[in-house]
Image (cartoon, rainbow, N blue to C red; front, side, top):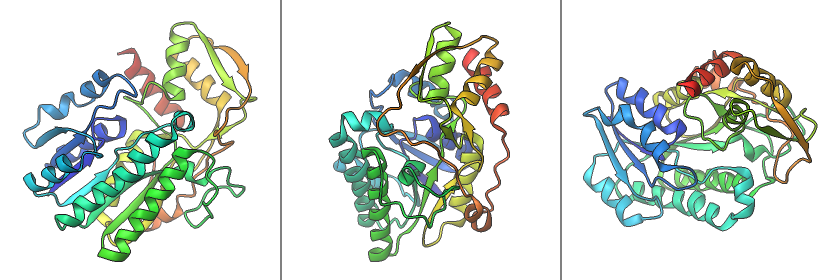
Amino acid sequence: MQILVTGGAGFIGSHLIERLLAHEINVVCYDNFDPFYDAGIKRANLYHAMQHSNFKLIEASILDYTTLNTCFENYKIDLVIHLAAKAGVRPSIADPMSYYETNVDGTLNVLEAMKHHSVKKMVFASSSSVYGNNAKVPFSESDFVDHPISPYAASKKAAELICHTYHHLYGFDIFCMRFFTVFGPRQRPDLAIHKFAELILNEQTLPIYGDGSSSRDYTYIEDIIDGLMKAIDNLNGYNIFNLGESRTITLLQMVESVQKHIGKKAKINSLPMQLGDVLTTFADISKAKEILGYNPSWSFDEGIKKFIEWKRS
């Protein structure tokens, strides 16, 4: 099998590629090394993959349809894992146009290239942000999600709809995976756990938005990769799945765990809530368990311990 992983040099993509290579699957990584954060970090993410004979790297944007099309021509792609996207809620508010261009038009480019080359299987990375400030918890895939509160969330919902269109028109098998706050080694440096760990290690002040009671369903990277592998194994028709741990951790609980494993006390600066931030995320994972056999096993504290070990190394 030959799998194309868009955005494969990122946090989730690089972990997934290593798992695929361990299963002797041929992988083509397609990534533009977007300067949203240091490209050197992404190259380091691919260090182990680059040693593998089953791995190929293409440096290009999904907005470059010519190169994308050439990729499909040169490699006999059987399945696409579409992770490439501009990420982040707050940056999307500052720059909504580029988020729609990459996350919506870029996804359409991938689907069109697939159609042109008769590739009909995709696993798409969506986000828990599509739920917005959902009144009902935990969040279920059947919940109404037409009230996104950031351009990023809206772009992910739009991409889900485009995926459904290609399933309906051309018989594509597409699973949309709604990730819930993924963390672990290689996490993006702008995300809260990584950012807070860096600040605590350097004895700098942490910006805490709100009263610290906002909560997230933090999901350890290994559980996310397990969910993606099960999606690949069961890919049939169009479906949406939550991938989370199905438990919530408050912002202050997260800070407590990070400072415990670092061994330093955090200095906190309390600030107002920011636009686009949701109050809570909480995944109902019963559907993923039943259909995919998804069974997350990492505790939040174990995951933080592993992350801090990686950060120190």
